[in-house]
Amino acid sequence: MVNTGDESAGNPEPCVVGVDFGTLSGRALVVRVRDGAELGTAVHEYRHAVLDRELPDGTQLAPDWALQVPSDYVDVLRHAVPAALAAAGVRPEQVIGIGTDFTACTVLPVLADGTPLCELPGLTGRPHAYVKLWRHHAAQAQADRITTLAAERKEPWLERYGGKISSEWEFAKALQVLDEDPEIYHRTERWVEAADWIVWRLCGRYVRNACTAGYKGQFQDGAYPSPAYLEALDPGFADFVTEKLRQPIGELGSKAGQLTAEAAAWTGLPEGIAVCVGNVDAHVTAPAAGAVDPGQMVAIMGTSTCHVMSSDQQGAVPGMCGVVDGGILPGLWGYEAGQSGVGDIFGWFVRNGFPASYAEEAAALGRDPHEHLTALAAEQDVGEHGLIALDWHSGNRSVLVDHDLSGLLVGLTLATRPEDVYRALLEATAFGTRTIIEAFETAGVPVRELIVAGGLTKNALLMQIYADVTRRPLGVIGSTQGPALGAAMHAAVAAGAYPGIQAAARRMGKADRGVYRPDAGRAAAYDRLYAEYRLLHDYFGRGANDVMHRLRRLRAEASA
Image (cartoon, rainbow, N blue to C red; front, top):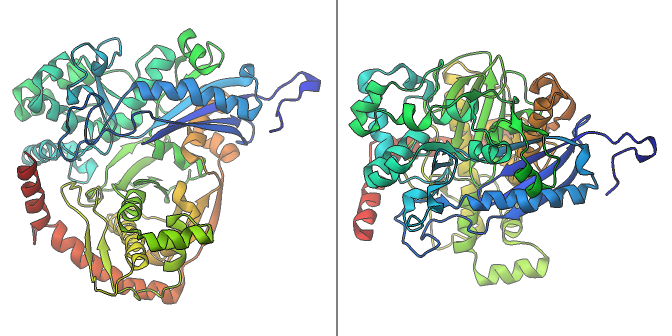
C-alpha cells in the first residue's frame, strides 16, 4: 500500500487508529485524518472466542450463558494494531490518537486497580468472575425483577427504556452475581463495561463513557437509580452504584487520557498520544455513515442488529433500549433499539440445515453456503416458499424485551427446501426491523431514512428484502469497517483535529444513499406476510400463549 505521508516534504499526514472489539475478534483500522481514507487494517481472533458451554478449565456453564476472557482483548492491542500500521505503511509518529468501540453491554468484575477477578488465584473456575458478553441472557429473572419493581414504584427512568429493562444490561447482570455467587459480588470492587476497561488499560485512567452509562446503566438526568430503589430490590444491592459503579462520566469524543508506556509497547504507537473515551460499536457507526441529522436510522447488521438514531424529538418508544440526551451526538436525543439475533440465525441454519448435496453443489460453483442459499432463494417470488418465521432464536431485544422467547417457523411441508427456510429467516429479520420502525413512528419519533452498516450489507438479496419490507430506500455505509472507522473518527476529535464529531463525520464519514429502493409489487406482497408475522409476534410474545417460556423452564429443569 502507498505510504500517505509526503516524505519529500518531510510532512507526513496525521492518522488515527480505531479498534473495534466485536463478538469473536478485534479489528484495528488506520485512518487518515483529513478525509477518512482507510489505509490499513488487521484482525485478531479471540483465542477463547465465546464461552457458552464451559470455562477454559472445563467448568460447565448453564444454558443462556455467554462469557469471555479479558486477556483476549489485550491480545488485540498486541497483534492487530501493529499489523494494521504495517499494512498501512504508516509510521507510528504519524498517529495522533487511538479510539475504541465495544459490544455492549459486555461487563466484567474487577479489583480497584482494574484486575479482572477471573485472573485471581482460585477464581478461574468461577463463572461469575468472567466477562459477561452482551448476549449473556441468563439474567432474565433479575431483569424482570428490576422492571417489575420500577413499574410498581413508578420510577421515572423506566420510560426512557421503553418500559422494560433488558437481561443484557449492567444492573441485571450484577444482580445475578449477587443472587448466585455473593462471594464474587462482594469481591468485585468495580463493575466495569469492557468499553471502559480497555480504555483504562490504554491510558491508566478509569472513565465511564456516557454511552454505556446511559443506555446500559440507567444513568439519566445526571443520576442512577436511587439507593432506596436498589435496596428494595435486595438489601445487599443498595450500595451497588456508590461502591461498584459510580465513576466520572466522559463525554463521547473527549480525551480519556494519554497512551501509557505499557500500552505503547503493546501497540507500537507513540507514548502520550490521545486515548479517546470508550464507546459502543453501533453508536460510533452512525457518524461513520454520515448519519448526523435527525431521523437518520442506522441499522448495524452483524451477528445481531443494533438500530441507532438521533432525533430532535423526545418520545417514549415501547421496547426501545434507551433514549439518552447526547447519547450518540451532542444536542440530540440518541435512540437505540435492536434485534438479538440476525447473522447468528443465518449462521445457525447453515450449520444445521445445509445438506451434503448442497455443499457439493456450492463447492462446484465456487460459492460458500450463504452465497449458495442466497442465490437459490433469490429465484423465488415473495411468498412462494409458504413459510413465516419469528426471529427470536436469541430472544427478542426490541420491542418485547424478552430473551426467554425463542424462534418459530410455520408452514413446513415435506416439500420445503433449505433455501425456503433460509429466505424465510432473512425475511423474519426484516419484519423485526419493520416492527421497530413502526414503534418509533407510532411514538412520534419519525424515521426518515434507513442506512445499513455491517458485514451483511454484502448480501444484495437481504438488502433488497429490507427495502421492500420497510418500504424505504436503503442506504449503505461506504466502509466495510464502520465501527472501527467511527472509533477512529472519535479519536480524531479527542486529539483536537476536529471541533466535534459532526464536523469529523462530514469530512471522514461515508455512505451511499438509496442504493436499494422498494419495489411496489413486492412491498405489497410483503405487507401480507408482515401481517401474519405480527399475528404470531403478538400471540407468542405478548402473553396469549406462553409456550415458549414453558418450554424454556422445562429445558432448565431437565438440565439441572
